[in-house]
Image (cartoon, rainbow, N blue to C red; front, side, top):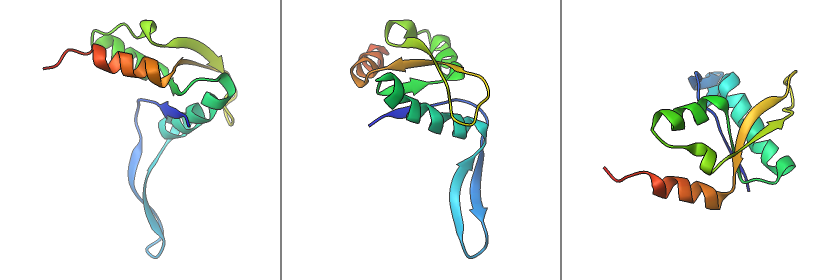
Length: 102
């Protein structure tokens, strides 16, 4: 099992026709997150996050480099390799428990 997380704009709402509508999220941010999830199998990690997400963690005062490794992956449907950050679920747990309770 793997997970992909990306941060950015997305369109959210009902897509499809009146008779066959699904509530969904659309856009490049969502597509990249899906591709990140697929990349977990290729690189042997549980979680892959994008550049905007790692920057958000830095803005929160955390040092995500302690928990994530920078990787370069090829994503299906993208012309250029992507720079992503990967972690195991154990490292994710360590990151989440490092945030102070407020």
